[in-house]
Length: 236
Image (cartoon, rainbow, N blue to C red; front, side, top):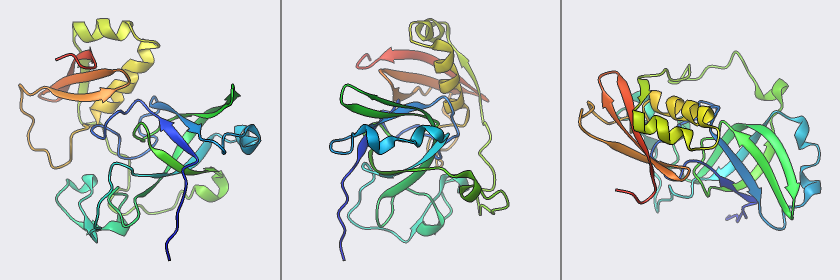
Protein backbone atom coordinates (compact mmCIF):
# COMPACT_ATOMS: atom_id res chain seq x y z
CA UNK A 1 0.00 0.00 0.00
CA UNK A 2 1.40 3.42 -1.00
CA UNK A 3 0.89 6.67 0.83
CA UNK A 4 1.32 10.22 -0.39
CA UNK A 5 2.16 13.11 1.95
CA UNK A 6 2.17 16.83 1.26
CA UNK A 7 4.64 19.15 3.00
CA UNK A 8 3.01 21.59 5.40
CA UNK A 9 5.95 23.97 5.29
CA UNK A 10 9.58 24.59 4.42
CA UNK A 11 12.63 25.28 6.59
CA UNK A 12 14.69 28.44 6.33
CA UNK A 13 18.11 27.57 7.68
CA UNK A 14 21.68 28.91 7.83
CA UNK A 15 22.85 25.57 6.39
CA UNK A 16 22.88 25.98 2.62
CA UNK A 17 24.57 22.64 1.87
CA UNK A 18 24.74 19.23 3.54
CA UNK A 19 28.43 19.51 4.46
CA UNK A 20 28.83 20.75 8.02
CA UNK A 21 25.30 20.26 9.31
CA UNK A 22 25.41 18.92 12.89
CA UNK A 23 24.43 15.28 13.07
CA UNK A 24 21.78 15.79 15.73
CA UNK A 25 19.51 18.65 16.79
CA UNK A 26 20.30 20.75 19.85
CA UNK A 27 24.09 20.36 19.60
CA UNK A 28 24.44 23.96 18.42
CA UNK A 29 21.86 26.12 20.25
CA UNK A 30 22.84 29.19 18.19
CA UNK A 31 21.69 27.53 14.95
CA UNK A 32 18.53 29.51 14.25
CA UNK A 33 15.97 28.94 11.57
CA UNK A 34 12.30 29.16 10.70
CA UNK A 35 9.51 26.89 9.59
CA UNK A 36 7.37 28.75 7.08
CA UNK A 37 3.97 27.14 6.60
CA UNK A 38 2.65 26.59 3.08
CA UNK A 39 -0.91 27.23 1.94
CA UNK A 40 -3.43 25.97 3.00
CA UNK A 41 -1.65 25.19 6.29
CA UNK A 42 -0.65 28.79 6.91
CA UNK A 43 -3.74 29.55 8.97
CA UNK A 44 -3.08 31.32 12.29
CA UNK A 45 -5.64 29.19 14.12
CA UNK A 46 -3.62 26.05 13.28
CA UNK A 47 -0.88 27.09 15.71
CA UNK A 48 -3.01 28.51 18.53
CA UNK A 49 -1.70 27.14 21.83
CA UNK A 50 1.71 26.18 20.43
CA UNK A 51 3.32 29.21 22.10
CA UNK A 52 2.92 27.43 25.44
CA UNK A 53 5.56 24.84 24.50
CA UNK A 54 9.33 25.31 24.63
CA UNK A 55 10.15 22.64 22.03
CA UNK A 56 8.53 20.95 19.05
CA UNK A 57 9.05 17.76 17.07
CA UNK A 58 9.54 18.21 13.33
CA UNK A 59 8.96 15.34 10.93
CA UNK A 60 10.66 16.09 7.62
CA UNK A 61 12.01 14.67 4.36
CA UNK A 62 15.73 14.14 3.69
CA UNK A 63 15.13 15.69 0.29
CA UNK A 64 18.80 15.62 -0.75
CA UNK A 65 19.38 12.05 0.37
CA UNK A 66 17.00 10.31 -2.02
CA UNK A 67 18.17 7.00 -3.49
CA UNK A 68 16.64 4.45 -5.83
CA UNK A 69 17.49 1.57 -3.51
CA UNK A 70 17.86 1.28 0.24
CA UNK A 71 20.61 -0.60 2.07
CA UNK A 72 20.03 -2.65 5.25
CA UNK A 73 23.30 -1.47 6.84
CA UNK A 74 24.89 1.97 7.21
CA UNK A 75 28.09 3.45 8.65
CA UNK A 76 27.28 5.93 11.45
CA UNK A 77 29.68 8.87 11.96
CA UNK A 78 29.81 8.13 15.71
CA UNK A 79 31.53 4.82 14.89
CA UNK A 80 34.13 6.48 12.71
CA UNK A 81 32.33 5.99 9.42
CA UNK A 82 33.76 2.50 8.95
CA UNK A 83 31.79 0.15 11.21
CA UNK A 84 28.36 -0.89 9.97
CA UNK A 85 25.09 -1.23 11.88
CA UNK A 86 21.53 -1.88 10.78
CA UNK A 87 19.81 1.11 9.23
CA UNK A 88 17.05 0.90 11.86
CA UNK A 89 19.70 1.11 14.61
CA UNK A 90 20.85 4.47 13.24
CA UNK A 91 19.61 7.93 12.40
CA UNK A 92 21.23 7.91 8.97
CA UNK A 93 19.41 9.92 6.27
CA UNK A 94 19.61 7.04 3.78
CA UNK A 95 16.54 5.04 4.75
CA UNK A 96 13.79 2.99 3.07
CA UNK A 97 11.60 6.06 3.52
CA UNK A 98 13.74 9.23 3.75
CA UNK A 99 12.05 10.63 6.85
CA UNK A 100 13.75 12.53 9.65
CA UNK A 101 12.65 13.50 13.13
CA UNK A 102 14.16 16.39 15.11
CA UNK A 103 13.24 18.04 18.38
CA UNK A 104 14.10 21.76 18.34
CA UNK A 105 13.55 24.78 20.55
CA UNK A 106 10.51 26.90 19.73
CA UNK A 107 11.53 30.54 20.19
CA UNK A 108 8.38 32.14 18.86
CA UNK A 109 5.25 31.90 16.74
CA UNK A 110 4.69 34.66 14.19
CA UNK A 111 1.56 35.31 12.17
CA UNK A 112 1.48 38.39 9.96
CA UNK A 113 0.86 39.43 6.35
CA UNK A 114 -0.54 36.01 5.43
CA UNK A 115 2.52 34.21 6.74
CA UNK A 116 2.64 31.76 9.66
CA UNK A 117 6.16 31.08 10.92
CA UNK A 118 7.73 29.13 13.75
CA UNK A 119 10.99 30.65 14.99
CA UNK A 120 13.36 27.82 15.90
CA UNK A 121 16.84 27.22 17.29
CA UNK A 122 19.12 24.23 17.74
CA UNK A 123 18.18 23.06 14.27
CA UNK A 124 20.03 20.46 12.20
CA UNK A 125 18.08 20.96 8.96
CA UNK A 126 19.19 21.95 5.49
CA UNK A 127 17.70 25.11 4.00
CA UNK A 128 14.64 24.20 1.96
CA UNK A 129 13.85 21.01 3.90
CA UNK A 130 10.18 20.01 3.43
CA UNK A 131 8.37 19.50 6.75
CA UNK A 132 5.52 16.99 6.95
CA UNK A 133 4.28 17.56 10.49
CA UNK A 134 4.79 19.48 13.74
CA UNK A 135 3.98 18.15 17.19
CA UNK A 136 4.60 19.75 20.59
CA UNK A 137 7.29 18.22 22.80
CA UNK A 138 5.69 16.96 26.00
CA UNK A 139 8.32 16.55 28.70
CA UNK A 140 6.67 13.96 30.92
CA UNK A 141 6.42 11.41 28.11
CA UNK A 142 9.08 12.51 25.62
CA UNK A 143 11.93 12.68 28.15
CA UNK A 144 13.16 9.33 29.47
CA UNK A 145 16.29 9.99 31.59
CA UNK A 146 17.06 6.31 32.18
CA UNK A 147 16.94 5.39 28.49
CA UNK A 148 20.01 3.65 27.01
CA UNK A 149 21.45 5.05 23.79
CA UNK A 150 23.40 2.24 22.16
CA UNK A 151 26.64 3.28 20.50
CA UNK A 152 25.94 7.01 21.13
CA UNK A 153 25.46 7.21 24.92
CA UNK A 154 26.58 10.84 25.30
CA UNK A 155 26.80 13.96 23.15
CA UNK A 156 29.97 14.22 21.05
CA UNK A 157 32.78 16.20 22.64
CA UNK A 158 34.57 19.16 21.08
CA UNK A 159 37.62 18.02 19.09
CA UNK A 160 39.26 21.34 18.26
CA UNK A 161 39.85 24.80 19.58
CA UNK A 162 38.71 27.58 17.23
CA UNK A 163 40.33 30.93 16.50
CA UNK A 164 39.49 33.67 14.00
CA UNK A 165 41.93 35.44 11.70
CA UNK A 166 42.04 39.24 11.69
CA UNK A 167 40.10 39.23 8.43
CA UNK A 168 37.42 36.89 9.82
CA UNK A 169 37.13 39.05 12.96
CA UNK A 170 36.51 42.14 10.84
CA UNK A 171 33.96 40.32 8.69
CA UNK A 172 32.14 39.08 11.78
CA UNK A 173 31.58 42.66 12.92
CA UNK A 174 29.85 43.47 9.64
CA UNK A 175 27.11 40.92 10.33
CA UNK A 176 23.96 41.25 12.41
CA UNK A 177 24.52 39.91 15.95
CA UNK A 178 28.26 39.21 15.50
CA UNK A 179 28.70 37.56 18.91
CA UNK A 180 25.86 35.14 18.25
CA UNK A 181 27.41 34.36 14.87
CA UNK A 182 30.83 33.84 16.50
CA UNK A 183 29.36 31.30 18.92
CA UNK A 184 27.49 29.56 16.12
CA UNK A 185 30.63 29.17 14.00
CA UNK A 186 32.76 28.15 16.99
CA UNK A 187 30.38 25.43 18.15
CA UNK A 188 29.92 24.21 14.58
CA UNK A 189 33.64 23.83 13.91
CA UNK A 190 34.89 22.59 17.28
CA UNK A 191 33.11 19.25 16.80
CA UNK A 192 34.78 18.79 13.38
CA UNK A 193 32.17 19.02 10.59
CA UNK A 194 34.22 16.87 8.21
CA UNK A 195 32.94 13.38 7.27
CA UNK A 196 33.75 10.74 9.86
CA UNK A 197 35.89 8.73 7.44
CA UNK A 198 38.22 11.71 6.79
CA UNK A 199 41.82 10.90 7.62
CA UNK A 200 44.51 13.12 9.12
CA UNK A 201 44.08 16.81 8.43
CA UNK A 202 46.18 18.29 5.65
CA UNK A 203 47.85 21.38 7.17
CA UNK A 204 47.55 23.52 4.05
CA UNK A 205 44.10 22.42 2.97
CA UNK A 206 41.40 25.09 3.08
CA UNK A 207 37.91 23.79 3.77
CA UNK A 208 34.75 25.65 2.85
CA UNK A 209 31.09 25.47 3.74
CA UNK A 210 28.13 27.65 2.81
CA UNK A 211 26.36 29.37 5.72
CA UNK A 212 23.80 32.17 5.49
CA UNK A 213 25.08 34.47 2.73
CA UNK A 214 28.78 33.63 2.93
CA UNK A 215 31.30 30.85 2.42
CA UNK A 216 33.04 29.97 5.67
CA UNK A 217 36.67 29.11 4.93
CA UNK A 218 38.93 27.44 7.49
CA UNK A 219 41.91 25.18 7.98
CA UNK A 220 43.23 22.87 10.67
CA UNK A 221 46.54 23.42 12.43
CA UNK A 222 47.23 20.79 15.07
CA UNK A 223 44.34 20.87 17.54
CA UNK A 224 43.08 24.27 16.38
CA UNK A 225 40.78 25.26 13.55
CA UNK A 226 41.51 28.71 12.18
CA UNK A 227 38.63 30.57 10.56
CA UNK A 228 40.22 32.33 7.60
CA UNK A 229 37.33 34.36 6.24
CA UNK A 230 33.60 34.73 5.77
CA UNK A 231 33.80 35.20 2.02
CA UNK A 232 30.83 36.58 0.07
CA UNK A 233 29.19 33.84 -1.98
CA UNK A 234 30.77 33.50 -5.39
CA UNK A 235 34.12 35.04 -4.44
CA UNK A 236 37.12 32.81 -5.21
